[in-house]
Image (tube, rainbow over all chains, first blue to last red; front, top):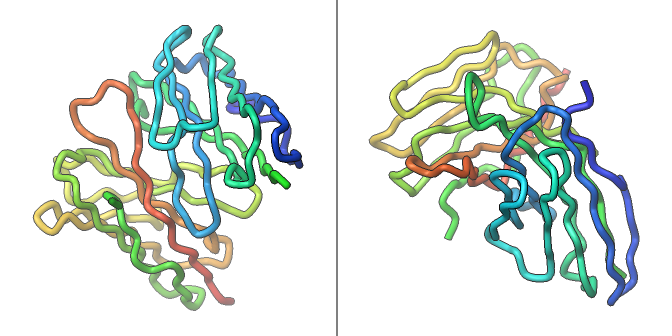
Length: 115
Length: 114
């Protein structure tokens, strides 16, 4: 059971470049989330989705975009990368129903450096 | 404003002793609380949770206590083991929401010394 899979694990970008962080879950969860974690800080919500075709902003959405065309995939797009986007990015999903409906399951993270 | 606070960045305990990790919150609309554990280079993993209608939840060596009047929860690990060394995040969910968003604290690094 793969759970939540994030690719790539590491990436170095130059300022102004763009990239897409991939996130796939195989648990048929409707709810998916993107977080960033900066050193010594908690997880900050970037964007989230409550189902295919529905996305909404979190606490820190500036500089990012998302799409949710399928239940399984929730890619995060960085346009015009900036050094402030250097961080570790986590994707998570949640059942939203049944036992354990509140428990978010996380991917292993993508470590991004913008130089 | 930080709605979930973990005021101790780090904690060091001896193997076999009790570890107590603390978490305070300010939003009285939070009704569900979770603890996550995170090892380096891995994603957070769920550890234990508690609903606001309870004051204690136990799972093996892990117990979470909730004091609603003080807006305080704590995670007790007894006995502590070296494998428990990790960063522990406290998280809270707001009642009435349909998006299951969580608010996280900054985390506490627990080191269990052999």
